[in-house]
Length: 107
Ligand SMILES: [Zn+2]
Image 1 (cartoon, rainbow, N blue to C red):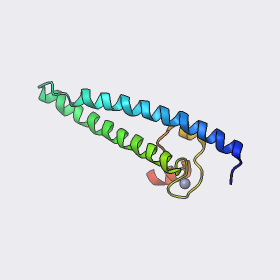
Image 2 (cartoon, rainbow, N blue to C red; image 1 turned 180 degrees about the horizontal axis):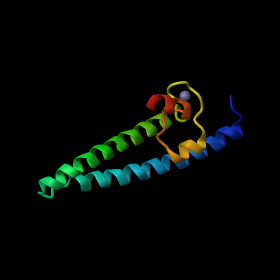
Image 3 (cartoon, protein in one colour; image 1 turned 90 degrees about the vertical axis):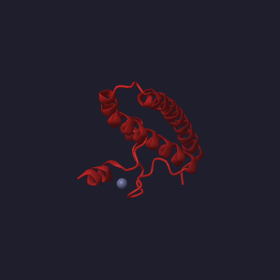
């Protein structure tokens, strides 16, 4: 169990992170709307297909991360249960695995 002081700083950190993710979600939603707007150019539509898929994936990860913050599961590796270092979460806020598990996942 962590101390009250630790809990308070964790909550502040999570509140900041949640704000970042919420902003990111809004930005990605705007981007998706722009990407899916029909320009009538089939060539461009084809190119944008991959971008649309990537943006949707990114939105899904943000929603997932926000859900884990709500549940109080955020920041724990989903594979081994270890605490994911805050430095990593600052770079990859939607990270679901710790570094070793992420590497295993890709390798
Ligand atoms: Zn892990």
